Length: 202
Length: 253
Image (cartoon, rainbow over all chains, first blue to last red; front, top):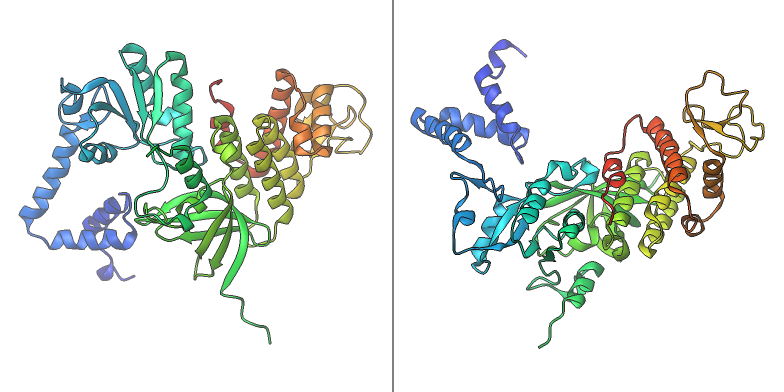
């Protein structure tokens, strides 16, 4: 390619940086990079500052491992929350989803991932040791497993149940079955079996 | 004049792996009897309202209607035949099933009929769902997988000269393709296998999965067999299967 047609080096670096982000393919990375270099210097600077600030000011909560500006995080520090009930989730966004329901009054533990042996993600890559230490060291009565109802989610639930067994804590998981608006005809065996197991008295 | 290939194909298959793609899609790795390993896109499957979702979970046997796409097939329909609930309720069985599925994916040829490999995988998954010993089921799968994929280990006689093996420790050499007699093992790297471990390997080769998994194997012998078969698998793959560590290091229940 003639030198005059090559992408300028700073834009190329920006494209590569965007391409490393999750869900961003090469074309999206190019679009974002070219969009940014066309914006006003103030807008570009404000984005750069927001990235640096978020990276500098956000840390892991020393109790629940959620992302937070202050340690402990707002949920862990709230005296009205039930500290004896821990809801275990895969990602920080799952905490927001459960908080939106407005029903749960306990605290959380964020694993930052899920067991996925085929992709080489084992227990050592998740914050399972921190959960075990929390249960071992405190007055925890119940651990609610709120991982996704997938094969990897099931593996994570069973693994955590096994490592928590010596501590005698009650381990429960979110109910599984037919989602609202579902069509029984299309339901798979696993979902139907779980829905029948979890049926309720009317 | 040759006809155009069909635009859709109906096949049974086991979902070996599922990885996310785009916002709501997933790419499935399937093992099918007639098409071998097939990668197929399941559109919108990560949305809660997806009708395909539960039918395309890994470690599930389903009937598929696959539409040929430009690069990957697209899952047009899927209906689960066996969700292997018995496996998914037991961590040890699940870890063994994941390990077997990974091996099947790595050994299977793409777009090439693999009926024997398919039957073997279904046989072992069925047995795991019935509650057989997961570790022995994995050993059975490794040994038979090597055989159906053209890497059969010689466990009944010397892999080099074909001589009958005496009732004594024998050298197992993954590179040589099995057990070696005293005369052939000079300067060949490998590991010594006890007579008991050799008998376990021979029985695994000729028995059905249920009969083999019902055998009581002392822990020491099981470890010898695990190490030997693991070495043979690694020798073919030239890599450690990713799920092996998880399977082998589960805390006791």
